[in-house]
Image (cartoon, rainbow, N blue to C red; front, top):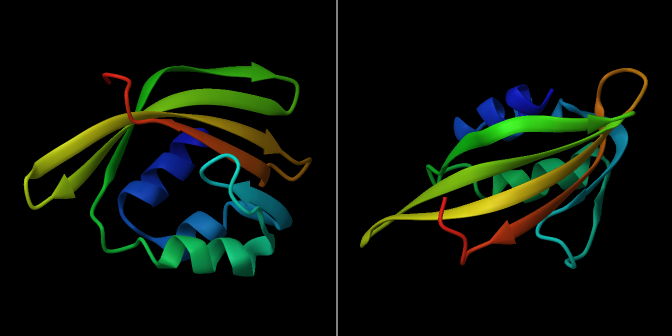
Amino acid sequence: MCDAYIAAMTVGDPERTASLFSTTATHEEPIDTPVRKGRDEIFAFLDQYKDLGFRLTRLGPVTVVGNRGAFQVRVDIPTPDGTRSMTATDLVTVDDEGLISGIVVLPDAEATP
């Protein structure tokens, strides 16, 4: 699930990414911002970033406890001045159907990926 999410985000496909979420999922990206609820709100959020061309690369293994997983990604963001890179930690909860029921993203712009 985590690698499917990373792949969908990297190609800038909000429909494919949103389809990985349950219909009642929550999405908090970045942490401490308003939580989006349900696929429609999640899709609307993702759709506004689809043309940025950022690339996500998983760093290390996914840590899994029960129905929760945590993983770090390197986020490469193209800018007019070159690529800006940062690290983010994603905390994911998966439902019984294997869909993401919640995700919280903790970006760290100061970390060196």
